[in-house]
Image (cartoon, rainbow, N blue to C red; front, top):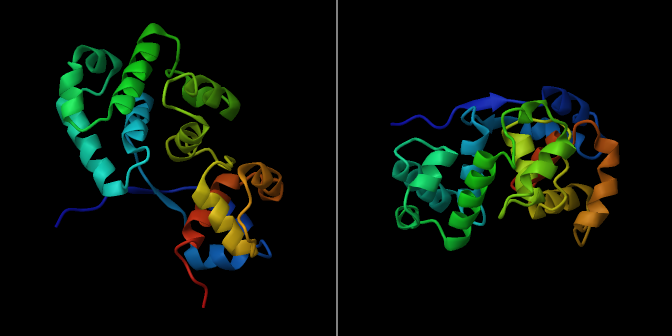
Length: 209
């Protein structure tokens, strides 16, 4: 029986702080520690993975992503993506839009238009500014990169429907807030909005007894 993906514990301070919140606290204590999947220490490879996973269910996305990496023979780099035939990458299951996005990312990184080497040292806003230059990478994907590759603690992905729906369930809101409405509601959750977003996702699949 194969082992599952390695998990990393993150935002422990957020769990402690939000565990005292009058509304979120019971949910936080019930869900417990935040553990997220560990990913390769390579920003380009992770961004390519993000593009593969966009708008797909987990199993289907994982299959396509695996075929994509296999087509590159494990060399997931801008140079290799641009060198391999488009037909080969399309054969891995990438849609035309996803292929165009990955090739645009590759070209921009190779040409220095999108710099990834020092991205760990950049503030959140600069990371988003760089990434959204790429075709197919919007604010949501940039936020997921900040949260799950960089493990930044105070990202508030208001464009995510799951976050908005989980927040609405916890706070008894109907309908769920829009992205614009959710933005100021996150002020009280600083500096742990990444943890709050994680718990909002989990709240959707959790019932308190």
